[in-house]
Length: 189
Image (cartoon, rainbow, N blue to C red; front, side):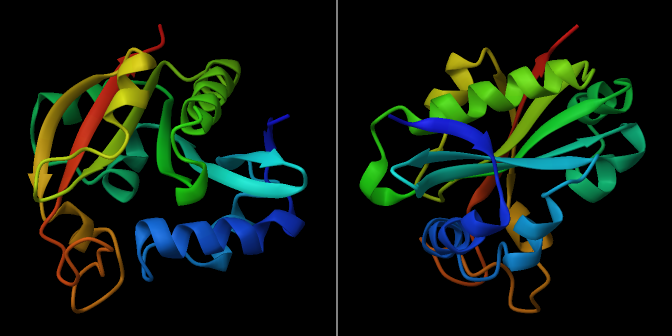
């Protein structure tokens, strides 16, 4: 049976292994996971079966002043929507082990995260999904099921979100990444 729960220190190596394969070598590191343990402004939910981490979602919770740090949207109506919100819940990094995809694990994790956002008083939930340069959006199905709406696409977005002079080392297209960040949103009011 799959359990969705908060990340603990023992889960970090499995979550990091999934991240390295699914999100690229320069996107998350061990500290991104350990920082999410016992934090008021972020959390990480994991799906666990028989003691093994199958997937995770690192989430951020912030006010409008955190928009540039966590999202970095251009001047647009979506940015205005974020700035008009009091408390934002961001599905920041979501990934499922490749061998476990297609079992609904990503949907279970993300659904729990949105429930957590509501409990934490967020008035909006959002995500910046990865869309390959070939046009496939990684978690579009999950976000649609959650009632989120796709809005803008920003090519090269992930190069700005990593600390690498070569740009993001994308698992699909290498560095610099040619893929898009796609903003999804949902009002929780």
